[in-house]
Structure formats: C-alpha cells, structure tokens
Amino acid sequence: MMAKRRVAVVVGARGVIGGNLIDHLEATGEWDVIGLSRRGGTDTDRVRHIAVDLLDARDAADKLGELREATHIFYAAYQDRPSWAELVAPNVAMLVNTVNALEPVAAGLEHVSLMQGYKVYGAHLGPFKTPARESDPPHMPPEFNVDQQQFLEDRQRGKRWTWSAIRPSVVCGFALGNPMNLALVIAVYATMSKELGVPLRFPGKPGAYTSLIEMTDAGLLAEATVWAATTPECANQAFNVNNGDLFRWDEMLPKIADFFELDVAPPLPMSMDVVMADKEPVWNDLVAKHGLAPTPYSDVSSWAFGDFVFGWDYDVIADGSKARRFGFHRHVETEQMFLDIFRDLRARRIIP
Image (cartoon, rainbow, N blue to C red; front, side):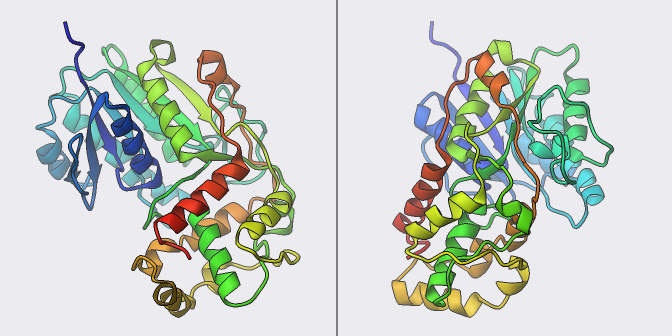
C-alpha cells in the first residue's frame, strides 16, 4: 500500500524562511506544497500559491477552508509593527486565524511547525544569558513568539496533531522585498560602497564589532524545520537551529570586503536607515550600468534591520546541541554561507 502523500501549507511563502522552505520541500519530491502569502506567487507542478489576508478571519476561512488535504502547517509569517507591544496582536491573530481555518477541515493534520527566534530569550532587549537554551525561563512580556507558542500548546492538548517551535538566529538566504534580510543588506551596502569609492566600514555600535554572533542558513533551517516536523521524538518540542559556528564582525567583515574587492576602514557608527535613505539614484544607476535585473530599491534595502543586528553590542548566541541530541547533525560554515549567497545574488543579476 502506498504511503499517504504529505501536504505542506507554508504560511509566509514569500519570505526568506518560507521561500527557502518551499524550495526544500519541492526538491525532496515527497511533498505537495501550498504557499500562503498576501501577494500569492507562481504555481509549479508541486507548489500552489494562495493570496490571503491572514489578519482577516473571514478571508482566511474562505481561502483555507478548502484545504482538507493539509497534513502539515509550517508557520513562518510575520507582520512588522513600530513597537514590541504592537507586534503581538497581528502576529498572534495570523496564527490563530490560520489554525482556526485549517484544523476543523484537515482531518489528517499531523503537525504545526512554528517559526520563532531568539526574541524568546530576550535577545532583542539587551544583553541576555548566553548561550541561550530551550529550557531558559521566559522574560517579561510583551513577546508574540511566546504568546504564539502558548496558543499552540493550549490548542494541541488532547489532539492527534503535534507542534514544534523552531528558533533560528539571523536567517540568511535569498529573498527580495523582505524586511529582515541581512545578507542582502550587506551585499547592497558593499556594492554601493564600491560604486561610491569608499572603503567598507562596520556601521554598528563599537561593541558589536567584537561581540560573538551566529547565523542560520535558510537552507539548513528548512531541513531542520522539516526534520522536526516529521520526527516523532521531536513532538511538542522547541529547538534552537544555527549554523554551528560563531564569529565576530571584526574578523568576518574583512573576508566580505575581499569578496567585493574593497578595502576595510575602521568602524564608524552610523544609522544605515539614515545614510542609505538617499541612495536610490545610485542603485538605479548601478542597475542600468551593469544590466542588472530591474529590482526596485525598496526590495533590496532592509536598512532598519541592518541597524538592528549591527546594534547588538553583546553576544547573541544559543546552544544548538538539543537538535543534535535528537538527531539533526547538519551544520554550515558561516563565512562560506555569506560568500555563496553573494555569488547567488550575482548569478541572479541582483548585484554586479
């Protein structure tokens, strides 16, 4: 008898996490995939996209109520807001609306995977206990990641399906128009530095240049997410997922500069959101001069996120050994990850 085919509903299909997750699921040849996003996408043999407003419970119910075949929900959607408190309501509502729409109709639902991050540990608030571990106690709210997990835990009690919470560091991979894409921030910043004839400088806080940090490759994250969602021993567990190595920007930045054939100058604290605000004409000239893909400046400039990451003047690291103890052993060298992403951006004609 043939095994029942798995059907993944990927929520947040156009983001760096969701997009790479769809690529991984499709590449395995073992999944049918339904991608949810506000803008929709291009369908393939194995992937169908649905444009839906998950903040609208009625729209979610109408669009998702037909997905009776869903076996796995991979939730990686995110709505940005100006403050930590304002993030809670929309981000919890989108998850609640998704589960409310799908759980009653998907009789074969097996698992709900929730994408979180180090905000669970308070990494965004200031110096926190490192290395962070999944068993660490919660911090003072507001924190939507915690509220989302609590919703899933409460909803799952007595049900046949299970959940997992995946906690990556800064996720790096290919995606355009994403508010949190550090690799693209670095690539465009370096490209413009070269175009303007200035050396590459670290723009963040002085302490951030020498603090320990780690990254999570989007491809590795996709593999770990599917592993946790399909491994029975991982049921109802949280896992930190990172590349497995640590670095400091004072060592990594010169290697990045070498790739772009740039000199490195001493750090100079500056807000990228401010100094890059007037650079759209420079970008447009670069696109025209090098025959690049016609990509709007707004789609390649996540400057506020760059300021956020480069402002961490304290160690931002978590213990990834729990996933290894449960059986996930893949790792990625972060320097190679950055260089591979830059090469991919060149191959796609996003940067020269």
